[in-house]
Image (cartoon, rainbow, N blue to C red; front, side, top):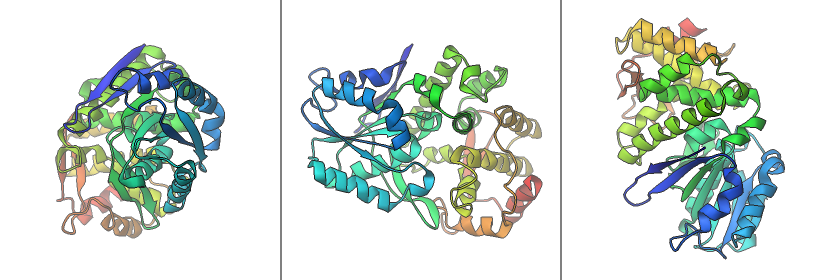
Length: 369
């Protein structure tokens, strides 16, 4: 199966290709035709982590070399806590050592952390070189690889340092999910459910109808392909209307406001990004119900779907409510001192508001303790 989702940005259009064994054809996709995305003969810096590179590095290097590219690699430690400027420096060092030029490109082979860091390095090396995203986690496939958001974390907050830098191509190979740990698969499903809540009610109902969502092997090829293409289409539609988050795109942060605070306070240990987003979605659901944005029935359906997926729906033990509130004030989405929350308005629609009160946030946190 193969699908192509277009991201029709005015100045930086590109395709998201969802294709079984897509990694083995990456070189062809980049090099073919007079309008090759990256001209054959150019240098490519492949950035990955040791575990992913062991699984898929040889396949990527083979297809890129056969297409006529000169390829070097840069391997970085795995994990959110390594998403720092120190890691970016390592990419810069590799780019300098390999003598990357402005017509060269970087290729991100890995999950969201590798994708974000490679994208940021590409955005800033020589004032911008091309980047190609080859996501290997479900979360990266449906979210991080699309839309051009790149960056690293600051000790006081997530993704506070970054740039918008759109990829030339996103190559999604569903078959690589066979080796994804079940916990990481569930984490990616949090972002899929997010799209169902804020944008695509049919996707939400498709997920509800599935017997199980907690592991790759229970989905089947057709359902997985549907989940990937519908999620990518949802993000492409939002991003194409608002590339740099001036308005509509902010709805993609559903569940992320409190989710990011949880990740930061836990120092990116004990809870991964998708789990934190799931918890944040439940909190936002409580707030939305209290403020009459949506019904208790819709909130219950969201909760049931998250639980069916095996995602956490309560706050991690020991988190201080005041610390969460303080962390929210450091969020990059704060405007004029007001934390911006994404509120669902029924299934398939959402709105951004700065009118969520401290009491409403505390009530939601207390309900989830």
